[in-house]
Amino acid sequence: MGAGRHIQLTVNDAVYEVSAHSSASLLQVLRNDIGLNGPKYGCGLGQCGACLVLVDGKAARSCVLPPAAVVGKCVTTLEGLAIGGKLHPVQQAFIEKQGAQCGYCLNGMVIRTVALLKATPTPSEDEIREALRYNLCRCGAHEEILASARHAVMLTERLE
Image (tube, rainbow, N blue to C red; front, side):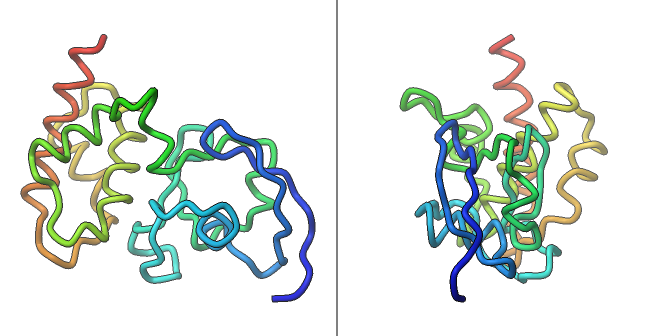
């Protein structure tokens, strides 16, 4: 890849100095330079959702996002959702409702659900389905994923 431009990224409330080549994606920097493996490389085209992260609280596809685009913003990965050793309610919901088979899509499903609940704390069934619509699961665990998202709504309502 060659030498890159030095940039400062805030990821999971920590500041990282990285050297990012102009052709690198945020996903590559997160996985290869920072060592975070929550976001997955799926399609590399921004279509499957396996690479989702939160950028200032909104879901973003890190495989097509240049690292320079998030300078000065807060990036949160799957690893950054848990606080003080306690799982985020969405993570807990996906465990309780067994919202995964192989788990490859799980990062994107959890991140998308977190973003949905930030924007719409009590989404309808249609809003949940619409939010998860463009996240692909090849195992066919859609019913369990939807049940997990519905359960996450209930768990987050308890916290309020």
